[in-house]
Image (cartoon, rainbow, N blue to C red; front, side):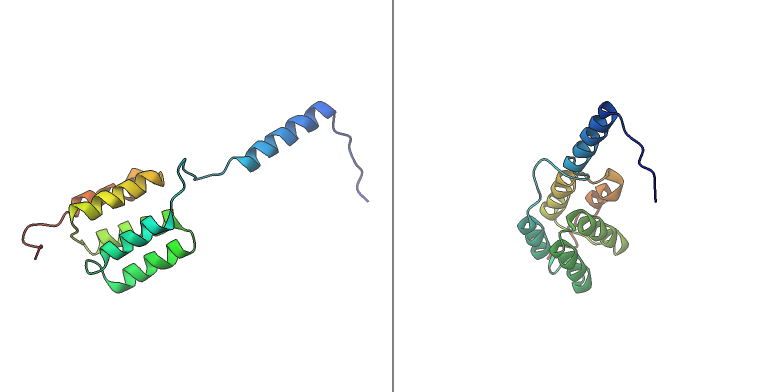
Length: 121
């Protein structure tokens, strides 16, 4: 049997207060919660520009509520395949990445994947 050690009330209240704050302070959150429909619209816009398996993976991750992971993985796959995208899609990726507070090094390179005139049409 373990011996119980009394904890002074002041220490106990401080610990309880800190644990309560920790529990209430979500990690990796944003002020405006992401809405799945924005990510689904992005996936729809990407259709025809990226491989089906890339879109399937992105859709699956966001369906699990893994918006940040899905967006990071999408960006990495876009870089891997040197995808060329219209500026409007790149702007939406950037907007969602900022909303999700993703580190710049995980997504900012997509701005270099702008569709060239010879790619359009």
